[in-house]
Length: 464
Image (cartoon, rainbow, N blue to C red; front, side, top):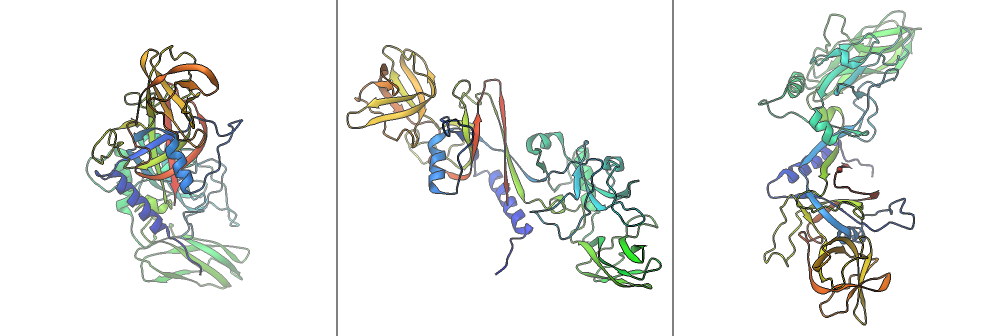
């Protein structure tokens, strides 16, 4: 059996995910964690698979979470560059391999190519005229290099800051007519001007032979008013274009299907119409074959009330997306959703420091000998040096999960067994239960060191 999942299905999944994130009843969070190294050199993250152990490892290592509110459709990015051959729009393009048939310019305008420039022999020219020169009109424009570009939309500074990368650009459909900015209005004008069932170009599958002059091109189908003209060189048809000789572009309307008939003195020519079902510009997500979603979250310094680690030992190596995590039951009698903007998932060990915590450092492994077993954990943050000092920590497969106990032996540095840092006062959960909620995404990364003055602009792209 041969089957595909269509772009319509992929876009539906993206829309449902965006709607779910924006629903008042849901809370999506970016989570970061894992301060301990991947390997001896710590140069490359471990491989990752979709398995229970992967999800459990992420939850064990979770440090902090921040609510996600920024999300968008995104499409592959192609910057316009002089001297490049761009492909014209084809109805065979797909979300997996859509090719360079649209561009974003230095003015952050997005244009779609409807026709390549060609010389009299039908050879394709490179694009040398910036589409920016065509402005933001709702109609296609022919540039002096022969290319035909149609303006789709302009990316706003805000959306580009949140969702643009070297590989992706944000794309959206304007669904309201009220309170639009100038750039939104220009996009809405393009959307409203589009007509369904347009024939926006023609593909010459076979140029035929024996043509002594340009043949007549007849378009038949269930639509109307599409007109085209042919160019002949050396007895063959080298191009068929929308007939713009009288001004405007007669794409026609209402075509679900069409056939091109070639008249004239020659024979063997085969020309295929290129149909845009919705009309170019009606929905730029369709035009750009967008079936990817990007989540964005900017973590500034410690964020919130110090929920994110900064400084020495604050590095993280894992990023994930959690849906509807809970408050630990030790902090809330009810099964309560965590809803704050930020939160810490690290456990909190309170010590009577005794001789002081000098020498216990972030990234050390602290331990407690309990006769038959030894409790161990990675130290993530230390607050205070006197009585009732607190240590934020996490445990994973490297340390094991033996709990620290009241009445057990003193807390030590596992590498310096003679150094005592304090005795157990209490052990409590963090603000977020790392083992709650749905885990939708996990990514392993090279180490990222955080600073109090720094901002991590984390963009997560999921391609369907």
